[in-house]
Length: 226
Image (cartoon, rainbow, N blue to C red; front, side, top):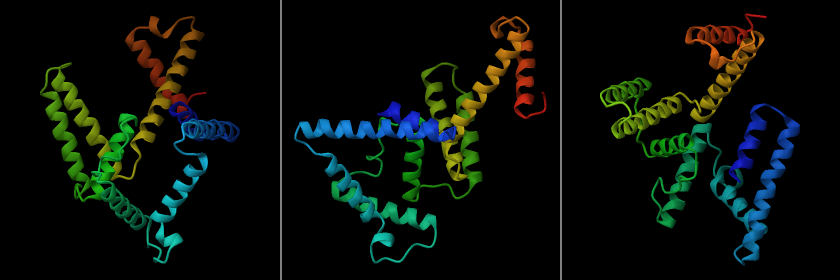
């Protein structure tokens, strides 16, 4: 299920409509297969799945499907959504963060935890406040022994705070990091190609030669070098 979902996300990112059509089919197949397994065990059917999500969408959008007035902004709609979900959690006796899936990649999980905490009012007043926290966490990391359990703990704190820095600016940290990974991969491929033209491999080059190729790759990326 996770693998197929990521492949669908990749198709969206590269804007490949044909690939997306195929990958969404693979995702849908997973939904149908899991529902059929549940049906075989007498637990629920695909009709129950559809009915449950339909009821949830209607319940959480009373300004669309009910008598409530439409909210004035996307932020108000989100706040209303959070209030309704809070009521649902109360009925199930769940804590605010109990619904955050443990199986999410750590970066996505950090984003969700952060946003839910903010919905309860646990938030920095300004972006400068988040920056101050980033510098504080970096100082604490610098004071630890490299490679120690304490350093690992502080690195986690730094990453979590940077996620909040992104969220505070309306940036999706997962998307930002995926973009950087793709950018690095593209530049590295360009380095390998340039080294190959010289009859060498990147790992055969000295560090200063690798850096020179890296800078060339950046120029190529910007369209400044043919």
